[in-house]
Image 1 (cartoon, helix red, strand yellow):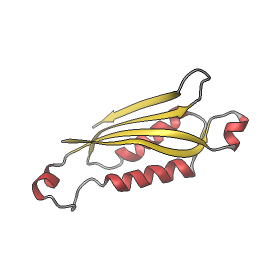
Image 2: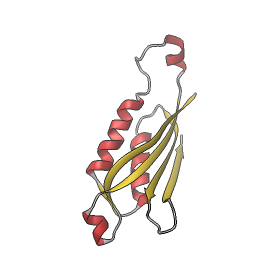
Image 3: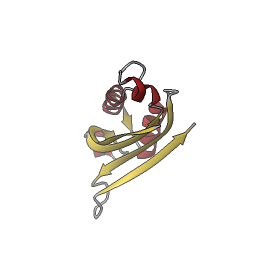
Image 4: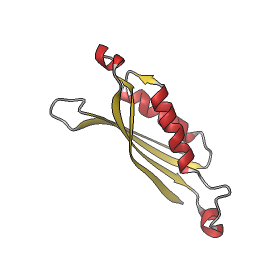
Length: 116
């Protein structure tokens, strides 16, 4: 098994339920951990059948940019569900930060994890 980490993916989206949040895109910072079996990749050193982290990153970017969410919880769950669609994923963990959501805090985040 291997743990693939996608770190500090910065995307702009509509997130929040206040009127200004529904109008203006905000940054969210996404960190993802994906546990997959990499035995074939290790043995062959070939890309056939590997878990394509570039493809899932593009899917996450598209999902977040094209959608609108009221809550960080819903956004986090939606990303996690997208990742878990691939049966090769044994475990995934998603953390979504909303920078400067609170006056005296760097950010607020929600973390969700799922296992098979």
